[in-house]
Structure formats: C-alpha cells, structure tokens
Image 1 (cartoon, rainbow, N blue to C red):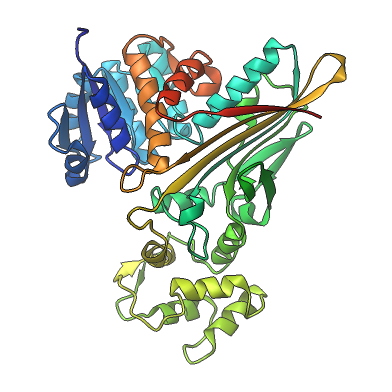
Image 2: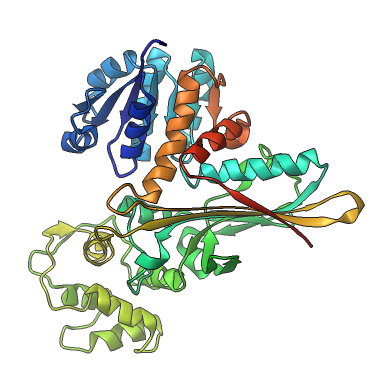
Length: 445
C-alpha cells in the first residue's frame, strides 16, 4: 500500500461533503477539515476516523501553518479574500493549493513567489468555472485533430431547480451560498463577437439577456458570466473569434434580478436598524412611500411597470409587502431580501437541484464544411442526499487534487484548466465514474 497522504480542506460549506466522501472512499488519505464554525466540519466528518475536524479562525496563522506544514496538498474552499492567507502559508511550506474559485487577482500577484517555490496553485475547478472548461477542451481537441478552424464558442452553465422541483414563481432556489449569488450578480462581464469585445457593466447584467434553446431540455434565459478574454490564448483561439460564456436561468429570472437591483435590494454596504420595522415599511422606504399608500402601486410606478406585472406579484409572494416585523435587528437591504428568499426559496427535503452544462462550438473544416459540435451534461441532486451543485463543484476539485498529490499531474505555477491541458482527460474519465458525463452531438450546418 502507498504511504497515506494528508489532504487539508479549508472551509466546510455546502460544497465540501462530497469532497470528503471522495477521499474517504478512495482510502489511503487522511483529511484535515478546517472551518471557523467547527460544528459544520464535525457534521461532515460524521464520526469517520479518517477525517479530523479543526476549528480555525481566519487570523490564526499559527494554527494554519501547523496544519499546512504536515499536509501533502491544500484545498481552499473559503471566500476569495481568505485564499491569500492560505496561499501565503502554502508558499512558506512549499505545498500546492487547489480551489474551485475563479482566479483571484491577489493570488496572481504571487506568481514569481509561486514559481520560485516550485508549487502549483490551481484555480477554477468547480462547475462553472471548471467542468465547463473540460468540456470545451474536449471539443476543441477533436476539432484540432480534424484540422478544423473554430469560428465560435457558446458555453452555458446553470444551477437551478430540477424541472419537478421548480415550484415557485421566482424560478430559482439556493443550492450554494446566497451571498455569493448576489456578489456574482453584480460582477461585470465581457464576451466577443467576431473579434470585438462587448463589455457588460455589473449593474447592466440583467438588462442584457436573451433566450437559448437547448434540445431536449427547453428554452432558458442566458446572461454573460465574467470576462472570457483570458481564455482565448490558452484555448488557442483566433483573435476574430465569437466567444460567449453565460449562465442559464428559467424565464423571468433576469427581470426579477434587474428590478430588485433597481429598488436597491442588492445594497450591502450600509447597515440599518430594523428592530421596529416591518417588511412593508422597509419596502415603502425604498420607493419613498408611506405605509398607508398602496405599496404595490407605488413600486410599480417607481419601476415603470403595470401594477399587475409578474414582478409585482413575485414581490408580494416573497412577503416584501407584508406588515410583519423584520426578524433582524441590524442588517443591509440585501440581508432583508435574503431573509425573505431563504424562507421561500430554499429546497425542501427530497427536492432536487439541477446542473446543466451546454457547450456549442461552430467550426469550419476542409472544403468549407461547417459543423456545430455540442457537449451537454445534466446532473440532478440526490433526494435526501447530496445536491447536484455540491457534487459538480466538489468532485472535479477533489479529482484534480488527488491526481496532483499522487504525482500523476506534475505541473507547477499559477494554473487553471485552460492552460493545463493534461488535466481534462483524466478528470473527465473519473467524473464519468461518478455519473457526470458529457453527451456529444455533431450537426452539419
């Protein structure tokens, strides 16, 4: 038997349990699971001796150093600002680090030190980004082997209720950190159309959406996700490419988000005292109305909507017009919104979330023949078990970490899947063993 390896996972949030399960089922691995809320780590550990739950506060660098020093690899599943704290310790003890997060600028600034220490910091290993990169690389390699020229890429990802669990008027439920949902909802994006970069400001994301029809699944709204420019060179694409990465949502989502943002419900920088405030009074303050006025009419007028519009009905359904005390003493507008959303938009026991990854590449081949190459992955949550979202974030991160710690991937430096082509084939092969597989299709245009 090979020597046991120690995997340190920092963060015990909603995405982590399948990762711990993966290493325990593989055997030959010990796991240190750190979180500031140690009860969460203890719950994931579930009396399994292979896993040690450790309480860790973000400013306790001595404890972090002592754990990382005796680790073989570190997986960071914490909010982005904390990655730099963990990376600093990894550099000190020459330990590689893996995360599901998008590349963080503060980490990119460590490039020279990472190269000097000869370690790997590998980012973008979740669902989006992550498995979507693998699917894109798979199709691009096939096209290259057939001497094709890529004309356009459309890559879509989603985390939404499965069709049978899509039973609320918002068309959405939370399968990952709600605050992160709203941070992403205000992040600028950019895509390319025939080589021209089209920038979408963070406050205009939901004004720039359209429909996409995915065969056998239906029609969804899509809006742009982050800036695609950094992927063009690693994927080996031409400068005149059309390249779009977007998220998929059920119809109505984008206007819901757009109007909530216009009302100021996304604001999180200012804390308010709600100890004697009802939801009705809170909403009245958003539109400069008094509580004895018709709040539905006032909100509709503020947004230039009909009083019978879908959005007004959805606000009412959420409870934002209710003359009921807000159960928060201090908080932001976003805290109040999330209070209502988590009450009404969480998954009930037995309900399922759904992941859709869908990639379409149009390429030109010998003789001017054009084809659309399609790769689609659909995964649903396990009733009373792991969510689809937790599996598609945890498993690629865990698989990549195991390949690294077992010496099968030897890359160093600051990397992500697009500039680490040796990763996607073994990762996809193992994901298939877990029921996560792309189906592919070719259409001659």
